[in-house]
Image 1 (cartoon, rainbow, N blue to C red):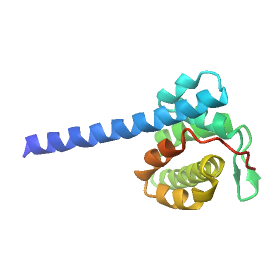
Image 2: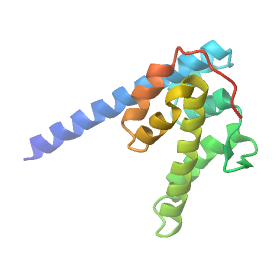
Image 3: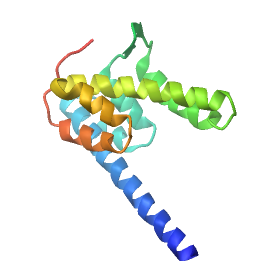
Length: 146
């Protein structure tokens, strides 16, 4: 029984690493094509959120533009990681971060795949499709969106 649990853990860990590498490669490609300095940070956990924010430049959520988004996005991930286990605050922070991430992905999709942005955002709610979707748009020419 223990061997089966260890095997399952190793399989899920390998899948998680593969999905992370797929996303990192995609963000690295986008950042390099946009001429963003230190594009290699796309391979570093948390720092890859900085690269994504650099690609997006700004984020507007329901008419509110997040100030200093390139700093706020990675810091928000750290805050959720640290405070995420607190009973009431943790789930609330996690939900807010999830919503912010969906808006960030939606903007990325609108920039790189405008015709499919809504569909891609809906699929990204489920998590696992997001790395494949980001990978599929990595070589597209970006368009400017608000």
